[in-house]
Structure formats: C-alpha cells, structure tokens
Image (tube, rainbow, N blue to C red; front, side, top):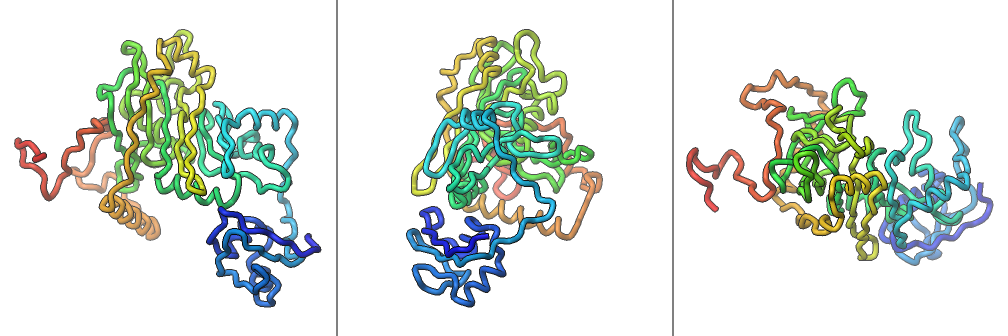
Length: 396
C-alpha cells in the first residue's frame, strides 16, 4: 500500500477521459468508493484544484493521488510468475514493429493468444517481457486462433488499447490473410455471406453456418491469387466481420477448406506429399489508425511450414503483393440496418425466445448445401421494392 502522495501527468492517449476511468486504467486496485470519498474530501486534485470523478482530464494535467486506497490482495488469486530467460527471448523475437502506442508481433503457429483450460503458455503470459517496470503492462486488443500465425497487435497503454479496440469493433481496421485451400474456387474473386453460430454440443469450441434467426451476420471477401492445377489454391482473405473462426468456416462451407484445418475440413483438408499437416492460415497484413493521427501498416513474414508449402506448390510470394482494394466504410443506410438487426437480436435474447428451425415457414428455410460464394462485383438487387420482374434484367 502506498504511504506517500503520488503525482501523475495525464498522457495524450488519456486526453478527455473521465477521472474515474483514468483511475481504472492506471490504478485499478483503488475502488470507486475510495475515489468518491477522496473527491468529496478534496484529497484528489487536478492541477491543484478539487476534482469530481465525472470530470474529464486533459493532456499534461497533473493528478494528485493521496496515500493508501490500495485494495487488499484477493484470497486465492494467483500471482504472476516471473518469466524465464527463454520466455523473455521468445517474446522479444516475436516483435516486428514498435511504435509509441503498440508492439506488433508475428505470432508463430501453435502458440495460443490467451490462456484457457489446459493452456499454460500463451502470448498474454509473455507480455511482461515487452515493457519496463515503470510502464503499464501491455494489453491484447484482438486475437488469433492458436494455429493461425501472423500479425498480432499489442497496445502499450490503456488509452491506446481503448482506441485500437474501437477500430477493431468499428471495422475500420483492415486485416489481410493468406491461406492455402483445397481445390480451386469456381468464382475467383468472391464474397461469402453466411451467418455463423456455435455448434451445439461443442461447448462453444466449434462454429457452424447458422441460417436461423439466431445466426450472426458474417462476410468474407476472397481472391484466388494462384492455383496448382486442381489440387490447391493460394487465396487472399479479408474478413469484413469478426466472428470466431469465420475464415475457416466460410472456406469449408463453399467446399474449399484451408489446408491442414482438420477441425472444419476433416480428412479432406490435408494434402499428400511434402505439404505440412499444420494449418495454412496467416494474418499477413494489418492497417489500423493509431493514436495521434498516425497509421500502423505492418506485414508479417510467413512461418516456415507455410513458406515451404508455397515453394512445393510452385507459388511465388511476389504474386500476392497486389491486394484486394480496401472497401470504404458502410453507408449510413447499412449502418442503420445493422444497428436495427443487432437491437432486434438483443431483445430476443433478453426475452429468452428460442425457436427451432423446424418452426420457420418452409419458404424461409434453405439447405446448408446451398451455401455458396457469389462474385464480389455482381451484387444484384434484393427481393422487395424495386426488384426486377422475372425474366427481365435489372436496371443499371
């Protein structure tokens, strides 16, 4: 417990946040009740003046924090074990870019992003190696599957973590993946729009295409860069939404599972010969706005097994330099429609409504075998007002 008065200077990425939120970011061990009591008695000061928890702090202001207030250790809470030299070296070797707001890693395949049941070695557990003792602990702001390699962004401060999270949830972060898939998609530049949901009986560990009213909207843009006969293709993927296992489920759903993804592609997802049985999905590039008006644009090299498979199949990485054009932000009409759909689904979940697929009218049901990709540039009119009559072309 601190026994001296502490002085903190507000950093640029905390500009404009509420004072209580500033405490939660930098002194989370101090409870809100203590903060409120200090404010009522004038012990918290901002630039020498009394402050309220709802006041917003500005860059360069000095926050005075009185002694004490640290919450006692929680009984049974595990202390973080110090990292071994090997773990520190592993963490530092993953770093491919350092900025004032972030560390950018090239995560190897086989390393989980976060811990879980039976998972003891993960990226989150190695983050202490990336900061000095006086710095705040770096924070995860998004995830990659354990067997997916590539670009992983780590925020250096609580403020930058909040801003990066907004860009990921608001879809203003551009993510580009490379994958090797079985076979050759008939449509070489396509858009997959298939809603996803958790597969029953899998404990939430596996996803599936769910076209009932409970399925969550999921969209993936893809482009075939090259193919090795009819055996396999090298594709570029851009997730336009951020559902769990989205790229893996979507590619398997159109009949072209990712090479090595036995979870969704089964035995047919493996190639014979010298091609590795590891999954061939790599987060190749990330473009995201950073605090201060800068942009982080970083590319991650392929892991060894992926690079070796590219050579075996006759693919040249240079051919992947021309990427799909970035799509602009959704229109106001699309944003309103998505917000309305989200609110409708939220209300239904709150009411606990559950309706089986068999209850839906026959005309609303569609066989899962109909799941398919459509060309990205041929977005025809939807049913309803303004739809063309049968047999007549749509007006352009």
